[in-house]
Length: 362
Image 1 (cartoon, helix red, strand yellow):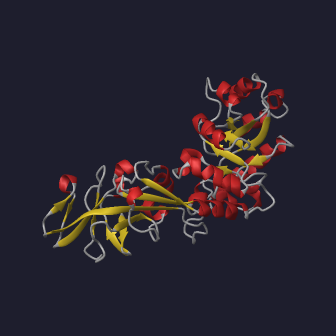
Image 2: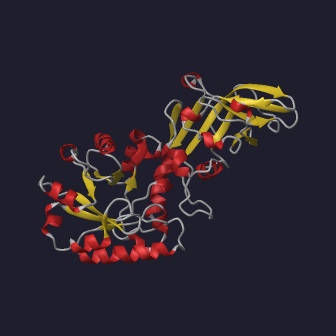
Image 3: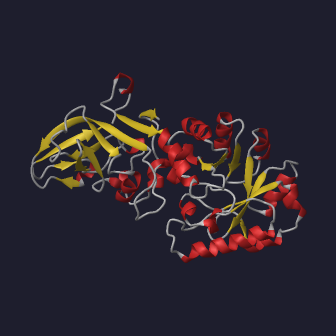
């Protein structure tokens, strides 16, 4: 555990610690589900809020050679860090982006015949084909993809990877998983010789039917539980702490925070920490979330404001000015924090702000 904020950290009252060795170990653990198959890494959204500039080189050093991002700008940033990596842009070939994709040696994930034709006209032979097997988002429908089998535009567009995305991989008993695996198998059979990728983080644990030729985990690398309801096999990656700025006593009937959404039922001891929704901590956790102070679980009381959060530290004798409160870490993992805020750990991770000090370990 890291101690109180030091002189290099006083520019902000909160600190985000990111364990790069845990990310690398989680990537290896996910790849171990199919040891004979390469494992890629999804590093979109600034590596799920953990910082692409630090995470991408760490994964490369661990052995990852294929990376996925969402946007062209993310791909350009990843290319600057990883000059030799294979980098796919998941959101495809948006109008006017072909020249930049080519200039930075990025591979678009194509999801329509129009995109295939446009990319083929560039003469570049490096892209992926996205087939929608149930998400109803991006990609060709299964009938559209099957109709493309043997079409010269597939070779002209340099399709080197077939892809689809699982709808409910974290719920292994959902019937949609079997339907998608079966549909993707039909598409794969129609395009012999082209490697295929279906398994996301949770999909890595669905067995050989979902593994195909390339795993592409994301969330679980950053500590999220790929098997909800079961013990998390992933190491925790992020730890968010904030310094207590002030401790005060309030009497029964006194309120705390904007709009008086919390009222003390009896005399209580409150601590205000230097962190708020401008730092990415969700306002929806108001009167629902918790922090840890000296190991004691302390409720968040009142509405979370832009820069400050109020905690009820009546049961936390260690609470004092300058003491650190843990908002994410220990028993408050990202999935727990997300649930308390009525959302998911993905949103918690990708919302992590940039104002506080980032401390990388491992």
